[in-house]
Image (cartoon, rainbow, N blue to C red):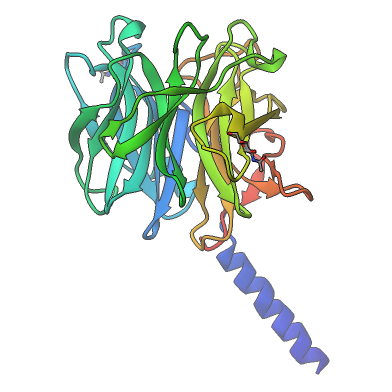
Length: 331
Ligand SMILES: *[C@@H]1O[C@H](CO)[C@@H](O)[C@H](O)[C@H]1NC(C)=O
Ligand SMILES: *[C@@H]1O[C@H](CO)[C@@H](O)[C@H](O)[C@H]1NC(C)=O
């Protein structure tokens, strides 16, 4: 009896060793800014803003895939988009994979590579797997816009949320109806940077990311100038009944992820599910530069989302690089 219990404890211990994959941050030590991850059909797919070798502008889109989070450090990588010239050939930022109407799409930002005023949101259309090839579908807005993401409601349909200037606003979040994967309706202002932690060096709201949990719809976003250590995540919470394209239907709180333990300017995140679908994980970037930096030295961090007793998300405190964590459930 005692022997059997010891044996079963040993077996349980071994099986948890086998099933609990561990990982350490950073997941991408360089060129890891504006990261986004999805998990589907056995693979994690990671994208980030990626300067090409020996250039200072961001000139291509790449996807890296692996079966574990730690595996992304040396995962299979391929270029899915590049242009040698033209209106969407440079400063290619903030790519995100989204599945809509039975296909994968990549929403990203690009301009002519010379003038940041030419930055626009664009979309590529792919196939049934994120590993299929992609082709250009459309430019979503004729006005300046960056960092687009998809926000979904069962009762209201899908929206495109991005960073914009509208009617004389500072750099804010705009929301538009997603009429189809390649076309959006006219924008409305969803959130403007007004609070002290949203206006350091420059007033900025950008990098929105949707999250759904416990019947609630959340939207995180990045606040303040990305060249400062105050770049951090804010939270918008939908009130559950009002028109989601109206700012009045959302309440703002934050900051909920800030610089710590040698990681500065923690922001521009995305959310993804664990392989077994039971957990939500946060992927974001930070820099080791204690003055703050908005360049290719930013690295990609991954941490599990926890929940406060009142049901709100707890994104935790970024740990020192190299700290070991248990990977997402089901790896
Ligand atoms: C980038 O520069 C390094 C050092 O100057 C050089 O060795 C390397 O071949 C260059 N890479 C590309 C892709 O041009
Ligand atoms: C949600 O926001 C709308 C404004 O868009 C308001 O009319 C409505 O009363 C709010 N509902 C709740 C439950 O707070």
